[in-house]
Image 1 (cartoon, protein in one colour):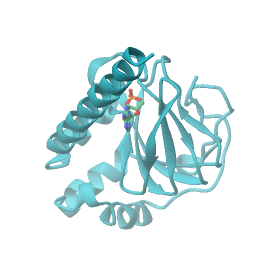
Image 2 (cartoon, rainbow, N blue to C red):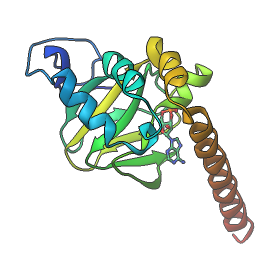
Image 3 (tube, rainbow, N blue to C red):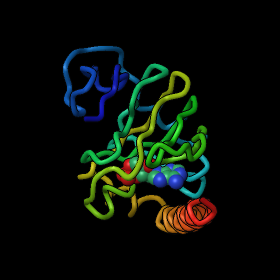
Length: 176
Ligand code: CMP
Protein backbone atom coordinates (compact mmCIF):
# COMPACT_ATOMS: atom_id res chain seq x y z
CA UNK A 1 0.00 0.00 0.00
CA UNK A 2 1.11 3.52 -0.65
CA UNK A 3 1.70 5.77 2.27
CA UNK A 4 2.55 9.26 3.19
CA UNK A 5 4.21 10.11 6.47
CA UNK A 6 2.78 13.55 7.11
CA UNK A 7 0.03 15.49 5.40
CA UNK A 8 0.66 19.24 5.63
CA UNK A 9 -2.59 20.42 4.18
CA UNK A 10 -6.07 20.22 5.68
CA UNK A 11 -4.73 19.33 9.14
CA UNK A 12 -4.12 15.74 8.12
CA UNK A 13 -1.34 13.22 8.57
CA UNK A 14 -1.03 9.55 7.64
CA UNK A 15 -0.03 6.18 9.07
CA UNK A 16 2.79 4.42 7.23
CA UNK A 17 1.69 1.57 4.95
CA UNK A 18 -1.91 2.76 4.97
CA UNK A 19 -3.74 4.17 1.99
CA UNK A 20 -4.08 7.95 1.95
CA UNK A 21 -6.52 8.01 4.85
CA UNK A 22 -6.62 11.03 7.16
CA UNK A 23 -5.48 10.24 10.69
CA UNK A 24 -4.43 13.29 12.69
CA UNK A 25 -4.11 17.06 12.65
CA UNK A 26 -1.07 19.09 11.64
CA UNK A 27 -0.39 22.57 10.25
CA UNK A 28 -2.47 24.10 7.46
CA UNK A 29 -1.12 25.47 4.18
CA UNK A 30 -3.05 28.67 3.49
CA UNK A 31 -5.01 28.89 0.23
CA UNK A 32 -2.99 31.98 -0.83
CA UNK A 33 0.33 30.26 -0.10
CA UNK A 34 -0.81 27.27 -2.13
CA UNK A 35 -1.61 29.49 -5.11
CA UNK A 36 1.85 31.10 -4.82
CA UNK A 37 3.44 27.64 -5.00
CA UNK A 38 1.24 26.67 -7.96
CA UNK A 39 2.42 29.78 -9.84
CA UNK A 40 6.00 28.44 -9.64
CA UNK A 41 5.12 25.10 -11.31
CA UNK A 42 5.94 25.08 -15.05
CA UNK A 43 2.92 22.96 -16.10
CA UNK A 44 0.63 25.62 -14.56
CA UNK A 45 2.31 28.49 -16.48
CA UNK A 46 -0.64 29.00 -18.80
CA UNK A 47 -3.25 28.93 -16.02
CA UNK A 48 -5.34 31.98 -15.20
CA UNK A 49 -5.84 33.04 -11.55
CA UNK A 50 -9.32 31.47 -11.69
CA UNK A 51 -7.84 28.16 -12.84
CA UNK A 52 -5.12 28.32 -10.16
CA UNK A 53 -7.80 28.91 -7.50
CA UNK A 54 -9.70 25.89 -8.77
CA UNK A 55 -6.53 23.74 -8.65
CA UNK A 56 -5.72 25.02 -5.15
CA UNK A 57 -9.19 23.89 -4.01
CA UNK A 58 -8.72 20.30 -5.20
CA UNK A 59 -4.99 19.90 -4.43
CA UNK A 60 -3.63 18.89 -1.04
CA UNK A 61 -0.06 19.65 -0.02
CA UNK A 62 1.78 16.78 1.54
CA UNK A 63 5.26 16.35 3.06
CA UNK A 64 7.10 13.02 3.12
CA UNK A 65 10.44 12.06 4.65
CA UNK A 66 13.34 10.74 2.57
CA UNK A 67 12.82 7.02 2.05
CA UNK A 68 9.02 7.20 1.99
CA UNK A 69 7.47 4.91 -0.63
CA UNK A 70 5.10 7.15 -2.57
CA UNK A 71 3.79 4.58 -5.05
CA UNK A 72 4.20 0.83 -4.88
CA UNK A 73 4.45 -1.16 -8.15
CA UNK A 74 1.59 -3.62 -8.71
CA UNK A 75 -0.60 -2.02 -6.04
CA UNK A 76 -3.69 0.03 -6.79
CA UNK A 77 -3.35 3.80 -6.65
CA UNK A 78 -5.82 6.66 -6.52
CA UNK A 79 -3.69 9.80 -6.51
CA UNK A 80 -1.82 12.00 -8.95
CA UNK A 81 1.32 13.65 -7.54
CA UNK A 82 3.35 16.68 -8.49
CA UNK A 83 6.71 17.38 -6.84
CA UNK A 84 6.99 20.88 -5.36
CA UNK A 85 10.29 20.36 -3.48
CA UNK A 86 12.79 17.52 -3.27
CA UNK A 87 13.50 14.53 -5.50
CA UNK A 88 12.18 10.99 -5.85
CA UNK A 89 13.56 7.84 -7.52
CA UNK A 90 11.58 5.73 -9.99
CA UNK A 91 12.10 1.95 -10.10
CA UNK A 92 10.44 -0.19 -12.76
CA UNK A 93 10.84 -3.93 -12.28
CA UNK A 94 13.89 -3.37 -10.01
CA UNK A 95 15.56 -1.21 -12.70
CA UNK A 96 16.23 2.40 -11.72
CA UNK A 97 14.57 4.77 -14.22
CA UNK A 98 15.92 8.05 -12.98
CA UNK A 99 15.10 10.79 -10.60
CA UNK A 100 12.04 13.06 -10.54
CA UNK A 101 12.68 16.72 -9.73
CA UNK A 102 10.49 19.66 -8.70
CA UNK A 103 7.86 20.26 -11.39
CA UNK A 104 7.74 16.55 -12.35
CA UNK A 105 4.50 14.62 -11.92
CA UNK A 106 3.73 10.94 -11.45
CA UNK A 107 0.86 8.59 -10.69
CA UNK A 108 -1.13 9.53 -13.80
CA UNK A 109 -1.04 6.04 -15.38
CA UNK A 110 -3.21 4.28 -12.80
CA UNK A 111 -5.69 7.13 -12.94
CA UNK A 112 -5.87 7.03 -16.73
CA UNK A 113 -6.24 3.26 -17.24
CA UNK A 114 -7.39 2.04 -13.82
CA UNK A 115 -4.50 -0.47 -13.67
CA UNK A 116 -2.06 -0.98 -10.79
CA UNK A 117 0.96 1.27 -10.26
CA UNK A 118 3.58 0.66 -12.97
CA UNK A 119 6.55 1.71 -10.85
CA UNK A 120 7.75 2.09 -7.29
CA UNK A 121 8.58 5.69 -6.43
CA UNK A 122 10.54 6.49 -3.28
CA UNK A 123 11.40 9.93 -1.91
CA UNK A 124 15.16 10.42 -2.30
CA UNK A 125 15.14 13.56 -0.12
CA UNK A 126 12.36 15.04 2.02
CA UNK A 127 9.66 15.94 -0.52
CA UNK A 128 6.74 18.32 -0.65
CA UNK A 129 4.03 17.10 -3.00
CA UNK A 130 0.80 18.33 -4.44
CA UNK A 131 -1.68 15.46 -4.32
CA UNK A 132 -4.84 15.23 -6.42
CA UNK A 133 -7.35 12.45 -5.96
CA UNK A 134 -8.77 10.28 -8.74
CA UNK A 135 -12.12 12.03 -8.31
CA UNK A 136 -10.57 15.45 -8.99
CA UNK A 137 -8.12 14.41 -11.72
CA UNK A 138 -10.65 15.19 -14.47
CA UNK A 139 -11.08 18.71 -13.02
CA UNK A 140 -7.31 19.12 -13.27
CA UNK A 141 -7.25 17.91 -16.89
CA UNK A 142 -9.99 20.38 -17.72
CA UNK A 143 -8.46 23.34 -15.85
CA UNK A 144 -4.82 23.02 -16.91
CA UNK A 145 -4.28 23.94 -20.54
CA UNK A 146 -1.68 21.67 -22.09
CA UNK A 147 -1.71 19.07 -19.29
CA UNK A 148 -3.19 16.40 -21.56
CA UNK A 149 -0.49 17.12 -24.15
CA UNK A 150 2.20 17.07 -21.47
CA UNK A 151 0.88 13.69 -20.22
CA UNK A 152 0.91 12.28 -23.75
CA UNK A 153 4.48 13.47 -24.37
CA UNK A 154 5.63 11.96 -21.08
CA UNK A 155 3.88 8.66 -21.82
CA UNK A 156 5.40 8.52 -25.34
CA UNK A 157 8.87 9.08 -23.89
CA UNK A 158 8.32 6.25 -21.39
CA UNK A 159 7.15 3.85 -24.11
CA UNK A 160 10.36 4.59 -26.05
CA UNK A 161 12.48 4.06 -22.91
CA UNK A 162 10.67 0.79 -22.16
CA UNK A 163 11.25 -0.43 -25.73
CA UNK A 164 14.94 0.51 -25.58
CA UNK A 165 15.30 -1.25 -22.26
CA UNK A 166 13.54 -4.39 -23.59
CA UNK A 167 15.85 -4.35 -26.63
CA UNK A 168 18.93 -4.03 -24.41
CA UNK A 169 17.75 -6.95 -22.26
CA UNK A 170 16.99 -9.02 -25.36
CA UNK A 171 20.47 -8.26 -26.70
CA UNK A 172 22.09 -9.18 -23.40
CA UNK A 173 20.18 -12.50 -23.23
CA UNK A 174 21.07 -13.33 -26.84
CA UNK A 175 24.75 -12.80 -25.97
CA UNK A 176 24.64 -15.37 -23.15
P1 CMP B 1 1.42 5.01 -12.06
O1 CMP B 1 1.57 3.74 -12.80
O2 CMP B 1 0.05 5.45 -11.69
O3 CMP B 1 2.31 4.96 -10.73
C1 CMP B 1 3.71 4.87 -10.87
C2 CMP B 1 4.14 6.04 -11.71
O4 CMP B 1 5.51 6.05 -12.06
C3 CMP B 1 3.45 6.02 -13.09
O5 CMP B 1 2.08 6.19 -12.92
C4 CMP B 1 4.22 7.09 -13.78
O6 CMP B 1 3.77 8.36 -13.38
C5 CMP B 1 5.63 6.85 -13.22
N1 CMP B 1 6.46 6.09 -14.16
C6 CMP B 1 6.21 4.88 -14.68
N2 CMP B 1 7.22 4.51 -15.50
C7 CMP B 1 8.12 5.51 -15.48
C8 CMP B 1 9.39 5.73 -16.11
N3 CMP B 1 9.92 4.82 -16.91
N4 CMP B 1 10.03 6.89 -15.84
C9 CMP B 1 9.50 7.80 -15.02
N5 CMP B 1 8.32 7.65 -14.38
C10 CMP B 1 7.64 6.52 -14.61
